Length: 201
Image (tube, rainbow, N blue to C red; front, side, top):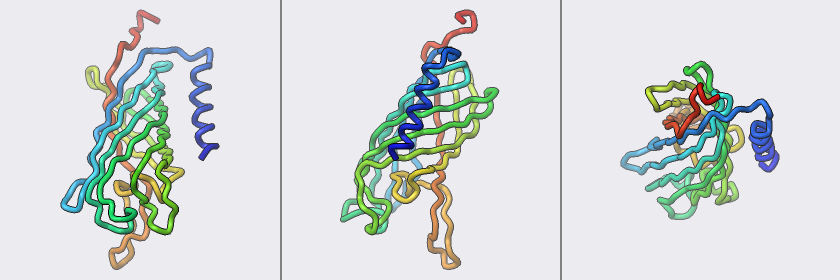
């Protein structure tokens, strides 16, 4: 995990020290998360990103996240008798935008969670890292940019705090879950914070 963090940090450092990089303002990103809600429980929360816009098409910066999960009754997903709790933390991200239509990016976060989604056979670790790689649709509407993307967690599929919200489950013929693919959907709204105009460059 330390090696992955160093790689991500080095990429951000390279972007910031590159003499060809131009700063084109900043944006505030907001993500509302409500991927699971029902009679057995749910998950709700939000994420916030601060994006420095570089060379018009790159958004990089820090992020914070808070989720509240309640009433998980499946003993394979939680430790002890705890059925609700909060996960929170932060990280960094980088998005590349293409022709006001598409984007691709990486999102690294370290989150504190009260749950052991890996099951009782896996050692419980309260701080868990995730590294999502993905992309999707990106479009500016008036002064609000909407990013609708699909992301894959490349380092923590088994004990990710996002495990209950993974979108794709593979079942056996009897309907039992055999495998859960670490794929998640994310919708972000980015609001400009004094972006440079073309005349200012």
